[in-house]
Image (cartoon, rainbow, N blue to C red; front, side):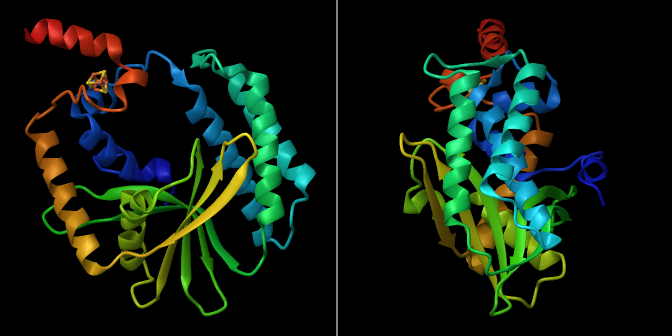
Length: 267
Ligand code: SF4
C-alpha cells in the first residue's frame, strides 16, 4: 500500500512520536491544529533533496545500473533547484544560500559515490510500512529509506542522514527511528531474519565526510519503544500538550508566534 493511503487514517509515525516527546505543544500546532509553519528550514529542505538523489541512486541499482558520480550529482541539482524555486518560504541561515547548498550537495554526493561499494542486493527503496502494537488503537506507519540483503542473508535497513557533525554512540544507539524500523521488519515478513540497522550519514563539514554507523536493537529496546509510544498516544488523546521551552528546537521553531500567543492566552 502507498504511504499516502497509510497516512489517511489516524496513525503515529517515528517523526510524530519524536515531535511529541520533544515539544508536545509544537506537535499540537503542527499535527492537530494544522498550522502552516512560519518558514521552511533550509537544512531540512536540502536534506530532502539529498535523500531523493540517494533514493534514485539505489532505485537504479535495483535494475542493475550504477549511476556515475556526475549523474548522481545531476539528480541532486535538479531536485534542489526545483525545491528551492518552488518554496519561497525557505529561510536561509546567514551562512547559507541556494548556491552554497548546491555546491555542498554536489560535494557530499561525490563523497558518497566514492565510498560506495556494491556488495548487497537491494530489496526495496522508500518502502512504506505499517504495524500495530498491543494496546495501541492506531497503526504506526512510515517509510524505510533502503532495505537490502547482504551475502550472509542478513536484512540490512538503512536510514540516510545529512548532518552538521558526526553522530555519537549515544545518538546511534538511542535512535528511535531505527528501533521502529526493526519492529516494522519483524511485523512485516522478516520476523525470522537477522536484522542489521545502520545510519548512512553525510556530514556537512568543510571537507565532506561519509560515515556509516551500525547498530542493533534487542527485545528490551523494542519493549521500551512500544511502552513509550503507548504513553505518547495517551497524552495526545487526553489533550496533554506542554511547551518544552528548553528544547533545542525552540531557536528554530516553526511555530514561535503561535507559541507566544499560547503563553499570552495561558497566563
Ligand atoms: S517555541 Fe519551543 S516551546 Fe514553543 S512550540 Fe516551539 S519548540 Fe515548543
